[in-house]
Image (cartoon, rainbow, N blue to C red):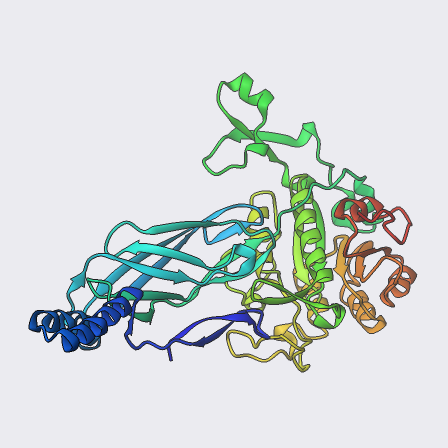
Length: 470
């Protein structure tokens, strides 16, 4: 059935819809013609004038003929929506273009403009009323999302009128188009690398040199290289742009775990576009993006996983993480793809568990149990299979004791561990804090209003709470 926008949100975080009555209806001009025709008919009856009667028949019959023509012709509207780019960072603009082809039942193209009601989520500015030239230049509007998530644009409802504007019909013209919005990472302060480094028990790290000017090589700039990697001194000497290429043996490594188990995020429901979320989970995603950006700019390779051992999504790739044989480290060149993948993350039900409120089934129709989909042993299997013996940084919410013990079992091969636990406030300490601290981990407890810079600055200091709340 054809549908059109309704007044309020549904349980899925989308605007409610109601059926569209696609029958031809008179426009304001059509009703004016009918009213004038009725008045002329009365005058013709009173005055006995045949010319006034003819005028009444014309004025009254024109809207009826227009409505009948729409019923007979059965116009079809093909609408194509393009979003450029389809994947943006929060705060950046995206341009939406709508092209329309207006066709009759016989296949001929009709000209003229049509009125389009474009359904747009409120965080992107609300619905748009556009006039689009059929077969001509596209109608363009700009959205600037402020929060990360996946936003649905459309469907659009098109108002098709007869050439004289006496009758019109509402038609649905397109499906939804998704706009993916990645979190905008904040700039984190510099802290000593020793806070996130293991204690020296990893033989693969103790014999390796640290990053520095002695083990930095340069090469010529290639299209697509980040400008922040340009080595200006070497560029001035060579007379052409040169970029830094560090000795891979000197690269630090870190395993970054973002907890996606919905049991750790029990806060009040909010929406990241069409994705169910909480304020605490959104803080964790933003902090994860900031850590990825900060560390990869400093020659640190980051293995981004969830606490079930599944790699976090990347850019426009599919989310079939268990099918990947090995988790690929995120470096400086891949940091943007990793951040863009965070546009799609959301709290997920535990493997084998029942989905929580607002949770949606997997796109591939699979279930959530078994090691292949990140069961209880998925994290340990991942660390064993990929040889992840590097320091661990865990970003979680109201993690319970059982969840903390599972993380400790899964990261047994790793070096030192740090954790940032996001609760309703820094004063409420999750059960996991004591368990992780007893295992030698550094734990920082924050609230959803705590600045990411404060949480980062407190890692490894021995202070459990991040202090300042902004």
